[in-house]
Amino acid sequence: MLRDARVTGEGAGDATAASLLDVTYQICLACIRNHSEAAWHLHAHHEIAQREQELKQQLRAFLDALRILFSSLLAEQTSTSEATPGTSLEASPEDDQGPRARDAGEAAGQPSVWQRLQEVLRPESRGHWPVREAIPGPVRLPESWEAPGLETDAPVEAREEALSSALFVVYCLGPFRVYVNDQPVEDWQSRRGKSIFKYLVTHRERPTPKEVLMELFWPDSLPDAARNNLNVAIYGLRQTLRQDNPAFPHVLFQDDCYFLNPELQVWTDFEAFLEHFETAQEWELRGDLAAAIRAYQTADPLYQGEFMEEDRYEDWPIALRERFREAYLQLLDRLSSFHLDRADYTACATACNKMLHVDNCHEGAHRRLMRCYSRQGQRYLALRQYYLCVETLRRELDVDVSQSTLDLYERIQRRQRA
Image (cartoon, rainbow, N blue to C red):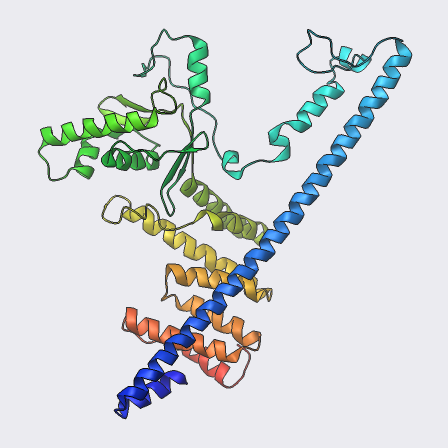
């Protein structure tokens, strides 16, 4: 409506009126975007409240488990004292395993109360930082391999200490970040070394020939110059990674190939995202929509932006970037459809706005937002979303909206159910 008035003013040649209408139109669009952002934050608040409630339930369950264990401990202490007066459950000075319940059960090989308490207190029993859950265990190198940078005659304790601290968390969806033992890696010695690290992390399934790296990162250099540049970059990369652990060889070279040391425990957000996304698809194929939605919701926050978004001029991330982008749009499409079917319009609008942030020409997201607004009685917002869709498609793609979008617009105009 306002847009039509603006066009009429321009056609009449009244430049001042047309300019004022155009400014008013832009303000209206800004108000609509603010409304959408407010809805998104409201939904986030609900999710935080729900998560807090879940944590409280976990805490109550944990306290109940402790109460049961200490009750059992007290009962065993009482029975033990009755059977052998003078004994107690206090630890002797030489006992570094904590108090032991010296009862018939322990003598028979059954776990003591203290052992059961230790089992409950293990981090795996309580749940912990989600990043750590997906980190695979270390893979041992064959004994025939000689890892440069770590002396073969080094004490076993030194080798084990070096290996135990090799824990990498790498974020590639959105801003690129690397953490080693929870500490950020920020002082990269070489820009190309950082790029090579990104490539090696992404292609950990197999070693990368040095010629491939030379062609990827120095395509216009002569072979000798490219080889020298690669050696310098690898040296800088090793210097960066060994700051936290000088004894550990992070980047290995064998058979003219470079690869990250398989001893490293590496978690990446894009692998976790893809794992949850594919799990959700499998649940959908099995007909378990509830499990699929849970997996989609787990994958959703892992996508913080495009894959290797800072490497816009590199060729090698392009295919993966598009793959994750399409997967994320498909994920949001499934979530928004699920929320719309259940009349959770706030959650549906949040998912749709995320889709439009990734692809502002996604007509399906525009239509779903129109339905959300219409079903909440906000007809003016539904019509405004249509106008925004029309303008975006014309500006970005120079095309008109599809017949499906136009039909929905006409139904909303007639105040029919969207």
